[in-house]
Length: 191
Image 1 (tube, rainbow, N blue to C red):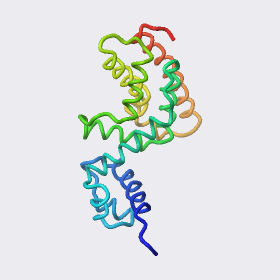
Image 2 (cartoon, rainbow, N blue to C red):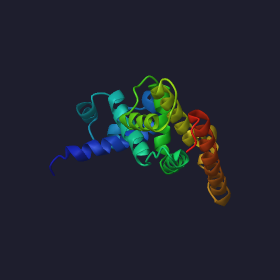
Image 3 (cartoon, rainbow, N blue to C red):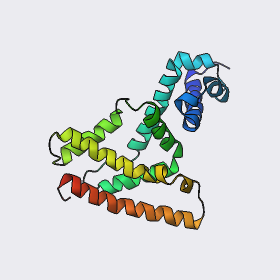
Image 4 (cartoon, rainbow, N blue to C red):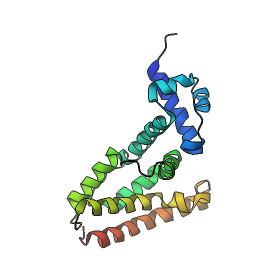
């Protein structure tokens, strides 16, 4: 059977997501990633350069997937926050990757997906001086609201059953109201 480099890269990315989501950059081991991907660990270095570059690649893919999954309509930011929250409920490894990024690469430049959404906010609202900085602050708060459940109620994530679902839905409803209030306060412009 001929060697399929695209399939190998995909297996490495999938295995790396599992490893990084569970252990972070510092705790991850290329040996485990290669073994799980049924690949030679030299393939990691050949395709990605280093463990840190592989982490960045997985992180980029996860962040872009999360942010591209939900359109940002500046006239309905509560829907954006709730949409990102819903995506994260369905994709808990994305949450863990975003948290590991904050812990291990806090000075990393923002992703293109973030920059585009910040630019959309800056264009849609009168945000004061400088508008880009205010738009970044607003976007940070919106993402923080979307992730609050996962960072402040970690034991609730694994809960199942009707009561857990009701609590999750109640939290989602409170996100909508909170987002609306924050947007009105920060933008001083009713939409």
